[in-house]
Length: 560
Image (tube, rainbow, N blue to C red; front, side, top):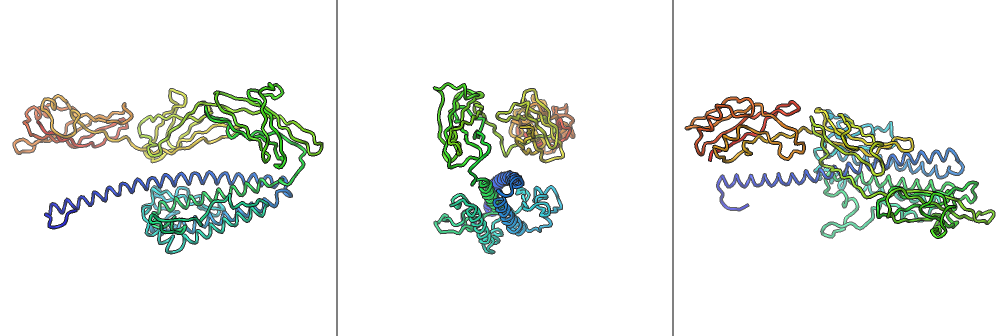
């Protein structure tokens, strides 16, 4: 902006430039904040999925303990201690860091967070998860879209850095990490530190190569939206650490046994559904075998019974640490079979004992489903088309439901038509199927509900500018143009409008004209128009198939 003397007009233009610059900056900020909201939602969804797996794993562990308490008792006790320690650190992050951080930045109270006056503007998604009387660990899932101070960083920086909550969090993480390492190593698993993340003593530097602490790197001058995402990421790492540690303890059950009264060959494929050109990979092993014992796997492809294998097609793989791995190039589509035997030396007799196995996998051409995360929208008053598919599952085995609205099958397999209510903002589409007699959720997606956008009122394809009088008269009326709106059959009808023009210095109006056509009075005004005369079409009302009347944009035309 230039210095020196400026006229009032120049000063006004300069001020408008500053305002425009600020608005542009605000636009970028909103995009970034929306991105943080998407990332944070993804992290929370992932954390919830891991939490469910952890709960299921503890249940399996307890069932094993109930069956053989003498063998599993030591490891079950350690697993319970890990669960308690994990409860403590997650609850600490949620209640002592995340919630106070939101409170001090948003300028609100815990009561307002838990019991908002306006449910539409609630900061929490699932209040039930915060109830400590129901859950041993609580989760505060904040909806970043409803947090007005999500772009603030002064209060979060003061809370995390100046008030030392970041340093305290680092100390808690270090304590938890060391506890996990010591617990697992005390169970007979050496050098476990190399398997544990949550490292806070790395080398961190800013843009000027100045060394930073862990808390400065993560929380100094970081906006609230990013702080919440980072805290949820840390919680996810803690959950992963817990799951891995408990898994190691579970593996230790029976690890010191050397004799078994029943052995069975097992095939564990990485996947039974692979794409053309990929490799099929599976682990083949003796269940509950001693990993110090080596064995050979003999197998042949294209058969279900190894006894019928062609000797020229038999291949041999030796085990390593109790597991033999086979890999196949998936060149042919369809169901592929293979069979073989595991040759194991009986520890008592010293004889080689064969254990047969058989398995299969499916090869399919590559496919992809692309789902936009920003534009998942259903429009009110329309039959919104969607398609639903899942690799390896036929369309007739997939059930699709909607939380709010109506869904019906389309004229093709996997295609559906969705109708949504006008008084809701979000609805959820869920796809499920039945596997092994159990209902399995394949996926769940949230769609925003919006009303159809207003059409643009036009005359002869224009809403402003100059027009030839003959073209003006020939247009015949106002057209509600839907532009590039995807639903081409969704049309509006003009209900009424007002026309005004200036003739000889006098403002002349047509009054309210019903419908979108030019009536006799309007046509007369156009036919008598002179070059330079302006016409103002205002208060243009249009009604769509949903029966709602909307006010459209004005049309301002000038006779050439």
